[in-house]
Image: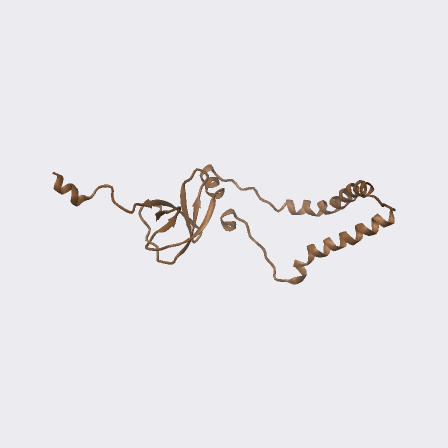
Length: 164
């Protein structure tokens, strides 16, 4: 989904990078305790009053760094149909018999020409249920519509032959 939104995720396996938040929190804990002691703060009310100023000062230093990050964002323009697919419920499914099961019903994907797509068994896909309850399927970063496959035919051609 991040790829669909144009977002690049950056992960790290470097232990030093993962510990940055923990180190910062530990520094704040020890620094705050030292400052409370230094200023002779003994009660919770005094600590709360001091903490308001402490946070304001700390955040002003941090936010100046974040202002630079904010300039990296770019605007995305999506139409209503695209937004409807983005703001949806996503569920993983596995293809069985060219179909997927979703909410006790079977569905088959349609290609962009409106024709049935026959997928291989055990293909992993993502079902997208949009805000207006339309169903789509995500296969290899492509979105296709889904149509329900009935378990039975409403009218039997063979039965109708004998009626006339």
